[in-house]
Image (cartoon, rainbow, N blue to C red; front, side, top):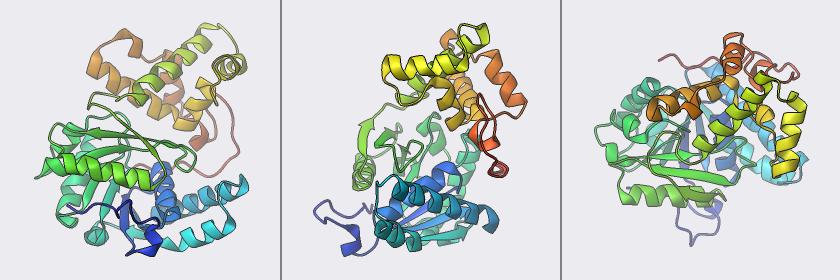
Amino acid sequence: MSAPASAAESDPRASVRMRVFVVGAGIMGSGIAAECALHGYSVLLEDVNEELARQGLERARRALDGAVDRQAITPTDRDAALPLIEVAIGFRRAESADIVVEAAPEKLELKRQLFEEIEPAARPGALLATNTSSLPVTSIASALTDPGRLVGIHFFNPVLRMRLVEIIPGLSTRPEVVAAAREFSERLGKTVVLSRDTPGFVTTRALAVLVNEGVWMLYEGTASREDIDTSYKLGFNHPMGPLELADLVGLDTCLSILEILWEGFKDPKYRACPLLRSMVEAGKLGRKSGEGFYAYPARGPPKAPRSP
């Protein structure tokens, strides 16, 4: 299979430009696209229609502008990266990609269906990766004729700020696929950790318990939302409190993760707080809806999920 450019090549811009096909132009997909372009990869950012794909391109632009504002990159870096991102509709152009990264919503049947369509469209040597944060990679790979070519590459939000990438081989994933995923991630400047293919892997299991406990404390009246978040930030040196973090991740995503962990382990510690469930039912999803545990400036409606 083809791997990303050798580590001996110090800059991918100096060699034949590698192409990454990102499936899903939402928050994660647009962040992955921005990170890849920033590191010299040509990027095709795909979604079900042009409007959604262009919304993703705008998110990528805002992410790069934000990196300039906090002096993480220069305006020159941003201006070099933006032209490398194009929008794509459907999977026809996946045949030109060296790496395909799926970043669709956390729905097992949706991801399986997508890979059923991606596999014949992608060229045989391309690396196939899912950005799942909690679903078993082995289950997603079961949709493939060749499940050994799929690996989990779990990026973190916001992608341009977060240095960590979690790599998850499925039961059938070949060693050279894992090696290619590691090399690609490291070329993006990420630190890689490996996890077994269990529900939630390492980081999402920890996140789910942290967030859920914060919501339970608010539900029980242990403290105010501000004092709960301040306790985590100043008591444990966390950059965000659990309720702020839930708003960033999305309350619907947090609930979905807890349900996946409950189904996988049947452990009471993964029982979602009723307050979390009620807020999701009320459409209070966090930053993407404008209101969660906190209120946020309106930035338009949340992106509609791709229909299974």
